[in-house]
Length: 237
Length: 94
Image (cartoon, rainbow over all chains, first blue to last red; front, side):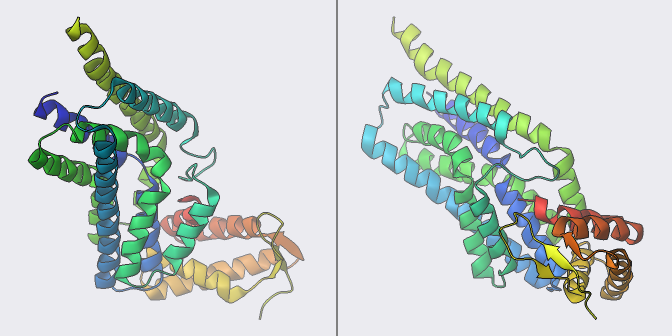
């Protein structure tokens, strides 16, 4: 696979990651709580920035760690069975997202374990310092790991085939693009937009986001399957 | 003064709580401030909504937390629809 194709796959996987909503939900609630408890605009900005940096760093650590594990396990020549498993995982997660991502009720309640949701809500209520918001950002990425694991693994498989310098570029691209939705909400909150309008938009478009995330995973899975499994099989004949 | 009304919490596993006006007031003020209302307006709206909710509670010795939320949202909507929306959504964001 050439470098532009590899980076395109990483970018698409990161875009799918960006469409997942747990971190966005936590950031929205954090902004709402900070405003509701009469925090100054500067404090609000510090908290939301701390959260954004925490989520970005955890994403970067996860993609780097997954790449390292895969590199040590398979080297730069990944067996086709692993690619096929990765594609299967993408399709499986896509179907799960279409079926289960949001709970069947009003609002944007996600199908994550309720204990994680309760833990995050309690942490939001007790977050007063930027360092706590940073930790919350780290936790929120871990909280949606069951959904982000598929694009993460495929990106890692692609990354380990790249030359070292391009691996760093790929990690940077993945982290930046996967944080885009958070960056947009961060800018909106920081520039004085109403939290209720942000939440209203999220609630109105939740089924579209759900469909887009699932469809994106299917497209990614199909592309990787054709490129890595069929391409090498047919090309090798 | 608080009413002698028990609030049954979600899931039935938790003990009922006595209704506290201050707690309701603070939650409404928070919702108004979260949509960037001035503090004076938030306090005024919270007072009016609390009075309306207490009126509704007069003949009810026991209600659920969801009942309180529904009635509060209904009255808050008259004063500040944005705040009412956020108040209603607060438990449904994550």
